[in-house]
Amino acid sequence: MQQIFIYFFEMKHRIHTANTQLFAYFIFLALLGSVLFQIPRFYVSGKPVPYVDGLFTTVSALCVTGLSTVDMSVYTGAGLALLLFFIEAGGLGLVTFFTIYLAVPSKKISMVNRNFIRDFFVEDTEVNPRQIIIRILFTTVVIQAAGAALLAAFLYRTGETHSIFYGIFLSVSAFCNAGFAPYSDSLHRFYADYGICTIVCVLVIAGGLGFTVINDIATYVYRRFHHKKRSMLSFHTHVVLFMTVLLIVCGGVVFFIAEYTHAFKSMTFPQKLFSAFFQSVTLRTAGFDTVEQNTFSAPSTIVSVLLMMTGGSPGSMAGGLKTTTVFLVCCYAFKDQEDKGDLSVFRRDIPLSVLEKAVGVLVKGFCIFFVSLLLLSFSEHAALHTGIFTLSDLVYEAVSAFGTVGLSKGVTPLLSVYGKVIIILTMFAGRTGIIAMTMSASHGGDQKELTDYPYGTVIVG
Image 1 (tube, rainbow, N blue to C red):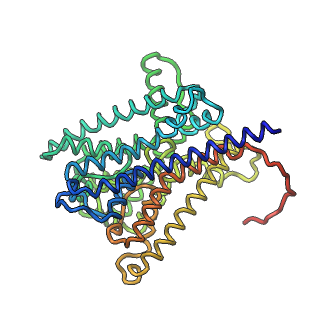
Image 2 (image 1 turned 180 degrees about the horizontal axis):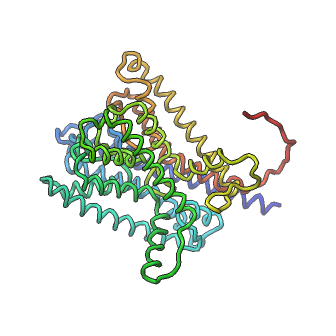
Image 3 (image 1 turned 90 degrees about the vertical axis):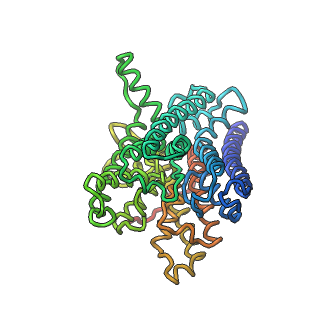
């Protein structure tokens, strides 16, 4: 009995230690960036922005959100390079953090460590954590380099004098789902450039799939075409691809219909179709936009909020509640009450523990969003009262921050100091809080209750 207590104590201690180190990693980089962004050489005018704006920009970059209280034109090339560093540190750093944490303490992978690896990276728990790091870095470099080369070529064709640097910047920002662009108008000037927008969309989708899915697809293709072996994609990959296609297609259809004579009215038919597709992709935590967000109609805004809240997939650069979480909760919610046992989806049974974790993450995520919105309604009471922006604009802003999307209806620069701090905390919670909750939920149910209580009956519905 004593050994059991010691085992569970050590396991919970390790989970809590991982959470603490995860938060410490982001807090340290956030404070470092807020100080560095006070250096005059990073600004065209030579005058640094207020400290809270520097902190806001740093956290937004680390959380790969894309919200900004200042215009991108204020930064010099060095300032943009510093911003790019924090985007990469935030996007790639979060994905590799767990493996680094697991690989450094010891060479042997414990049972708890195997569970972490299974949850965030690969199904084969025998893989060396260091090999996972190498695989992630190699995949990132290859995809970002290819995207940078293509974007640089297309930007050069448009007459951009900084085509190479801007190509690298956009490629890293897109793959990390950050949404930062080196232009004041994001990507508005390229709304009719199908080449640039397509490359950005591909990078955003790739970054939002997750390294597990990318590796699974690459292995599947390699075995089919080189070894002619029969290979199958994992169940996780099937769910992620299904949800990705479903959300992009459904979102695109809604945007195309709702904005045909509204936000897209001045465009040609192909431009309307492509803009709807781009909007549906970028809302999955990317944050780029080719059309002003405050020009979209009410139906599009509602769908945008749902897409931003859903986000990308586990183990990816994207934020949000994650596609698999929403998928499992929806399947469980619409399960036939007469069906007994585990939930069956795509000829696979889903364990109850997985469903409980998904429901827990969903509810906790909505609680974070609700608290953020409530605090914003207090801090921005004066602006709401005078009509500077509406409650709908604040909802959009809060969801965008929580889902680490970065799209805004023009509210961000108008926020009060308290409002900026609330958004900073929301971005931080959206980026790290969901992961921390998942880590705790993944292993919190391994310990059986030492005391059994009588069953209680509650009327539901």
